[in-house]
Length: 73
Image (cartoon, rainbow, N blue to C red):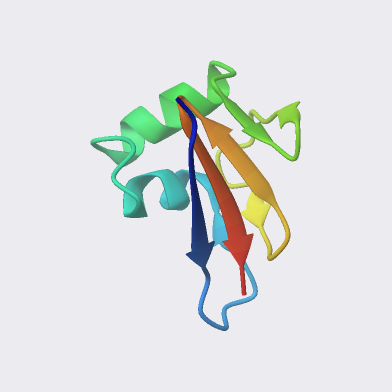
């Protein structure tokens, strides 16, 4: 079952994709985040994203495992 949550970047311009996965405790380490991203396990706005440091801005949507994360600002 898909879990949907909102992540507020709190006035920052963006958050990097690998940092988002760490901050939300969806991965154990930054290395794990990077491996999962480059192996094609993460989607941003409906497309597989392999850039570890992809800048996520308000309005972006991330899909990872059974999590949908909406980026708010």
